[in-house]
Amino acid sequence: MRKQSKAEEYKMRISFMGKYASFLLPALLAVSDYFAVLLAEGTAYYLRSNVLPLFHGEFVIPRLYFYVIVPFIFLCMLHMAHTHIRSMPFWKMAKNVFAATLYAVLLITMLMYFGRVSEVVSRLYVAMVWGFSFIFILGFRYLLKTYLNTQEMLQVPVLFIGAGKTAELVLRSFHHDTGFGFKVLGFIDDHPVSDWISQEFHILGGFHDIERIVRETGVQNVIITAPGLMTTQLLEIINRVQPCVRHISFVPDLLGMPVGNIEIESLVDEKIMMIKVRNNLASAYNRILKRIFDIVVSLVGLLVALPLGGLLAIAIYVDSPGPVVFAHRRVGRGGKEFPCYKFRTMVPNAETILRDYLIEHPEANQEWQRDFKLKEDPRITRIGAFLRRTSLDELPQLINVLKGEMSLVGPRPIVRAEIVKYGEYIHDFYLVPPGITGMWQVNGRSDTTYEQRVEMDSWYVRNWSVWIDMVYLLKTVKVVLLRKGAY
Figure 1 (tube, rainbow, N blue to C red):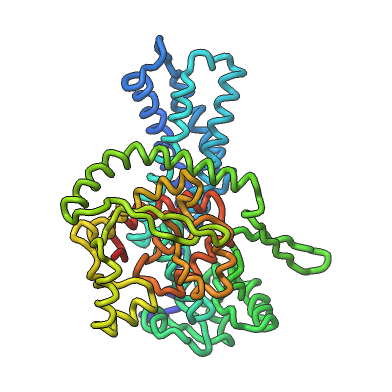
Figure 2: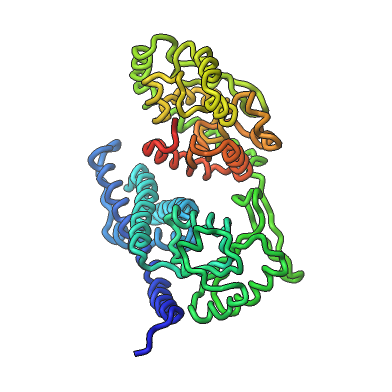
């Protein structure tokens, strides 16, 4: 019997995955969404009828509405928001699901009004259906996609052109983002730069082999991760690959550009593309919305923070008598200093101890000059180490947020001595209030280098949006629970 070639094996595998994944995954997502909506309706109905009976009388939801009409409206809105495509960043999908569920509830409310049933249906119930539907749809989708990715089921076959640092970054994003479901078949590159890629994946050939490899494997999705190519070289590769596949993606050389707010306009007659970048910071509406979001979430947070803060204050004083809260001078929006509140995590004579310690330990002095942090800090108390690991020392900063000196999400608050380390990026830092949390906190925290922190702060400011604030706030909860990179 003839031995099956590697290309034939790929082709058969791709044919199988493409045949079923193209309609099975969207169908599975739709089924998942349907049961998520039913659960949201059931949960809202139970809470409204048994836990929160704020109004007299009972309301009954007809089975036709409960099992057919309401779920159908949700599924239609989710489809119109393009949430049933196979591969999409999870947080982009979450944004689309948020909008779809909102529009679905608004449409349902309008139909209730014209159908003259709005008087017998609780508005609280409708509001809870919206909130629970958003949570359950995302939750069900996350579990489904995680399972499929873990089992390598219904994944989209993809071929990479370019095996360098950019490809590593794209692969890392695919690995950490549940929304993607790609199966990497291999790489094409004349001179693979990444040793890791060469060890973990197949290098199927060079640039001159592109058409042959695409034809032999039958792959229909190609990602070009070679931003260093000249425009003519990139255009040549695209022209060679495009007739053979359905989808081509490429990573352009736009490092540092605020791509989070980018829009592409095709000028067909002139055969050119125009890239438009929005400045969200210039929108008064966005700034007001961010401020309202900060105030509302901070007030809700204080309901939990006040009793917890009282217990922590007692523990701090018992462990190390002295002031419980201290105000450290930090640089904020526009370069103005403000008192940044924190629970005290150090001994009262911290400055003296630090000075003596740095003199006696030159290696620690180098670490301090580089990062303004010490992994083995002699100033930190026992309860202070716990507070830092859990980030509970930052609870008093909710007061800074209410005063308008800080935001819930923003660049890392710095001291004046750090300004010189920001270089030209300091102008980005001055545009927004510093945050209790931010991009650097959810991407390694203290394990990141100082240069990486500066770049993250600049990226956040240039790509800022209210949705990004919500995403980083949710990611912070996960990072704090895992205690990743904190000291």
